[in-house]
Length: 301
Image (tube, rainbow, N blue to C red):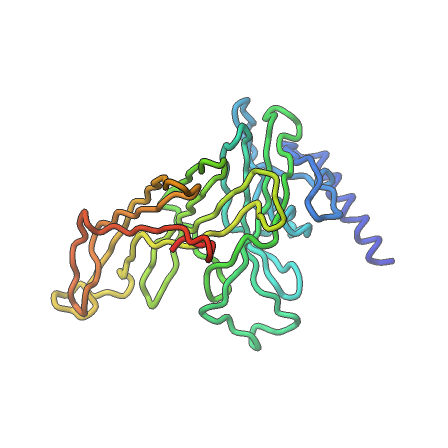
């Protein structure tokens, strides 16, 4: 009985909030695999700026989490969802494909704990997180409810370590490539630490807008590619030091491949890299990484 009263009270608060909202940018449509109606939940914009005719603010991170998990975090961007598992907003991306304007918000989810405390279960270096997502599209930016909920996904793929996802690199921009069969390959700029060295990477995600078959995913994780490293946090600038400083970066390009919908990925590297203790070398035009999609592993290698 108490649970029923609590649910009614929460619902009344949500409805009142929706009525008083300054920018009522709601999402319409039915959530995939969810008994909750998205139209009962306001999806606020990222900020309160006036909506322009040619653009619309995407759903906020907290709303993305709501539409993925159907659990209100009261505005938080990280909270427990079930069995000791925590969900955290990770990244949002707007794009146009096939005549539609989309927005996808991604989150990461830690493994279930099933009652274990943090002291009982330390995060291991190889403990990955699951990528989840909620996708929306809009066809009428001027409408009261400009966004339509396209669906959510509880498992896009796994990545990261120590039960944390790779960190978004705010200094670089995402890159994308539209495949011949009308899909979108998204490269998200990220980084992680490995033995004190910052490894700069791109995490690869593939969006399929078409009608899904049994084994298809709306979004699929295709792996992580390295573009550069930086040991600046642990190096020694003293001449002859064993841990010499080295920093490299790279530019990513997509090359269409005959007979394949997914492109070859090329990373042209520049800067310096460590070759042995105390020695570094300067990277040149011949220092190029190539990554090809492995259809058996469903990852770029």
